[in-house]
Amino acid sequence: MEFFRIRRTIPFMRYALILNAISVITFLVAVGFLAVRGLNLSIEFTGGTVMEVSYPQAADLHKIRAAIEGKGWGEFQVQNFGTSRDVLIRLPVSKTSNAAQTSNLVMDTLKAQTPDVTLKKVNFVGPQVGKELYDSGALALFVVVIGIMIYLALRFEWRFALSGVIANAHDVVIILGLFAFFQWEFTLTVLAGILAILGYRKNGLTQYQSFRYGLVSCGRNHRGTVGKGIIKILSFFGKKLISTG
Image (cartoon, rainbow, N blue to C red; front, side, top):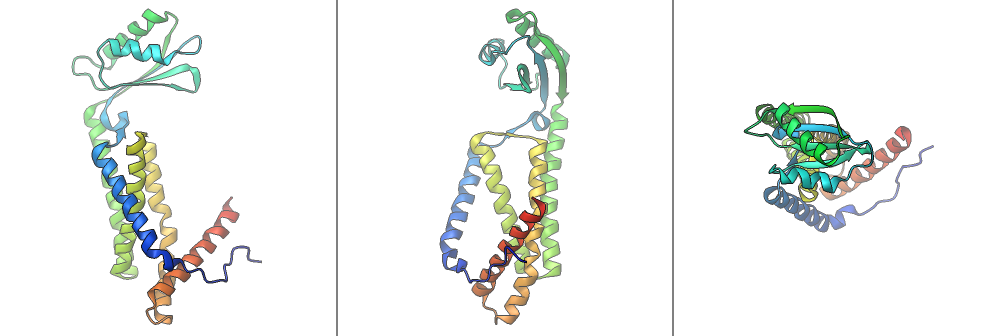
């Protein structure tokens, strides 16, 4: 018994111009945010010191930020993690002190407010390591996109390869644009998630075979073939949603 077999014809391509315009506008807006605001790169990419401290009671993040800011540090982040008593402090690379000196200075500042505060862990990432991770991440994205393009060009047609790259770029740029707009932290975990999205996109690529056969059977009727392909994709993902939960 098939729960997600769509038998009726839905005129998706009737709204193709409007939907394409929305996609292009969204893409350009995302590019604008990336150009103007940029990504809020995590310490893995920028380098710096990460401190985990614990308080005997709920930590006052505003007081902690004010104390650290008063010592002249530039851009830094203070946030809770785990519980309200645990605080994560991210500091940029210091040209005048190493990780140990930086952590000692911060702890002296915090203990002046709350003597019972304890240091749980300190991590340091050098600027060179951060740059290498950033370059490696960008290279990984590039290789994945080019690999998909080469596969589609060899397996199907160059037009499919071009459309696949456009679709991949569309998804990735819009996601990055959201991170730039909201200034969410861009970490290695986020990068892995984006690579996973590109990997899962190959599920949609399997429909290219149906498109190619459809072009032959429908006499190169692109609009009709694409419309039927979209219906098949919806049926496919409906079944997959039920089977995988």
